[in-house]
Amino acid sequence: MELETPHGPARAHLHPATDPRATLVLGHGAGGGVTAPDLQAATQAALEEHVSVVLVEQPYRVAGRKSAAPAPQLDAAWIAVVKQLELDGPLFVGGRSSGARVACRTAAATNAAGVLCLAFPLHPPGRPEKTRLGELEAVTVPVLIVQGESDPFGMPPEAPGRTVVRLRGNHGLKSDGPGLRAAVTQFLRSRDDGDVD
Image 1 (tube, rainbow, N blue to C red):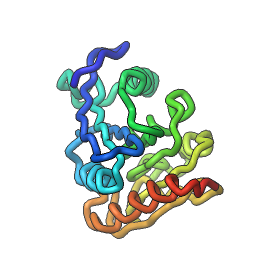
Image 2: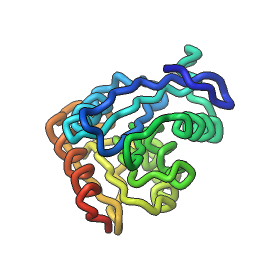
Image 3: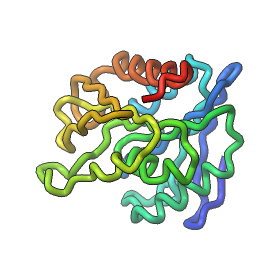
């Protein structure tokens, strides 16, 4: 499904759940698409928990460009897409890498109930002084971060309302699909039980 945004059309891939109780909207990484293994694993876990999933392709990807658009354009397009979706129940947002950053920066604007970060890029490789921790700290709803233990983009710290699950592997999160699915399942179940920090 193509949806208009201020920066060109975005594409939403809809995965409706049976008897849905919530919706999870996920974005892709800067250089990748919605078929990334971790996004597919999270989608499977959510559907098994009766959470509908929407995978969003940013306008620059739909237009065939490889390099990501600037952050303000990504955020504006993301908000425009989310506002056009018909949601089942509460909204959870997230994504992998760059998509996780977008979801964090726009969590308040989209009225998200929680944020799922797959491989959050805490800083550029080898540049810990260029931290993006502020993007995580600005989120006021529960956050789950699933991170590879050897991710060159760093390991985000835990904090009240922010859980970090460490899996073997690196930024690609391809080494432990079952662990990733289990983490996503637990996060969605805990939100359903009203277990909010």
